[in-house]
Image (cartoon, rainbow over all chains, first blue to last red; front, side):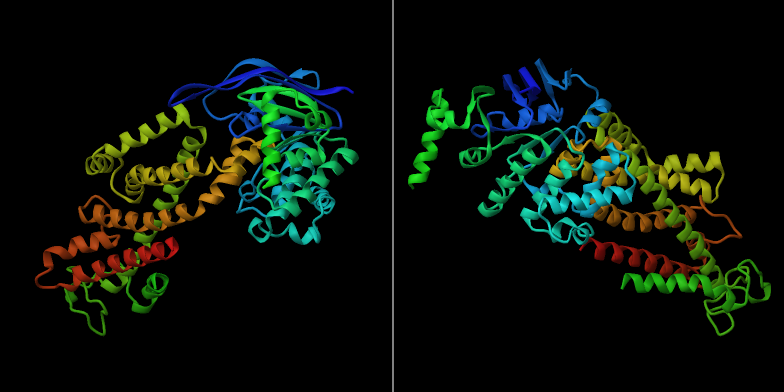
Length: 264
Length: 253
């Protein structure tokens, strides 16, 4: 399989009030075409920062100390804002944790959905709306044309997350980064969203980087898993391998925590 | 309530000159300083000009100055505060310090200097009022932008590939609409009041044109004998300010 995206020894520091912190210390992994990769780890280990780094969305005061991010044969870590805007949303899409916060409350669903395509593909409004409607029905929203006219507060949480997925997918990016997309949703909706990811992988050949701290999510839909701990990727293996024979102590600890939870 | 008072004043402003049948600068020397009567509804001033008509003309100038000053404040404030808040860091720092320095200049001194340089009239009054007025708006806008730009949907819009300008105009300013509108309704009365105040000091609109401030100014020396010459414009100033403030308070809720 060909590597679609490769991250090599990415180190990042952030200037904060309490001095310099080093949340990423040599992160390295790759994404193949057409697979779902899980990225797991405890809170604060740098999962989200890794994801944001791929789109240069790091917080203010960040300094890249070393590393490269190779996407389509090009190192994108030093691209300017202008060049990065062409990649964001167009080639790499992103979904965030809480759909209640990631939709602009003052814009209609339709205009938010089409913002991306109209920016990147320069589609006229009518065509963009048609495409948005197609995607809405693909992610399982009924009456898409009616929903497009509504505001975010008129939709439920699960529907908003579907809208976010449609929004991220509408330009058909080759990579979708999902930063804890199911954490804020209840279990039945979670299952539906995960099925949706599999559908995207199978029908649209999208590679998905799925960030989560829920091992159940990993077991259900990932092909490969990366375990992150204190700013480093400490383990990279297939899902079966991780659950059967975790290589590192930290992964063992994660798994046993999960098991003890299941017993309760 | 505020809307009702304001509506009444605006209707009065447009209809009354034709109702009274006098021109605002028509002088009736035989009927100086008359008390309100059926012939002159609000009385006349020391040159026998009809106060009813003059108050209505004054309303036009006062509201014109108030509204256009507020509008200019809004534009400058949105741009200045928006850019400062959006860019952050050093640019923000420099832009807000410039605003602070302007804010700390003695207002009256600058206005007097300005009216000496520009001559007195509507334009110099507008320049004087807006030169200081936009700062409040810029601060409010900047505060809102700083607050809103940490929201997740801004990050999401960035992840979609939206540029800074687009994020500012499409995602941030519409969400800051509420506080901006409230500030705007409070800017209008303060601009009207500033105009009245400057005219009262003789720095504003000049005779034979009339604004409420100049009329109050002319009425002041005659207060003991012809109190209506002071009180009528004063009542109109107060009622207008009250109505705008009431609207602002209502919008706040």
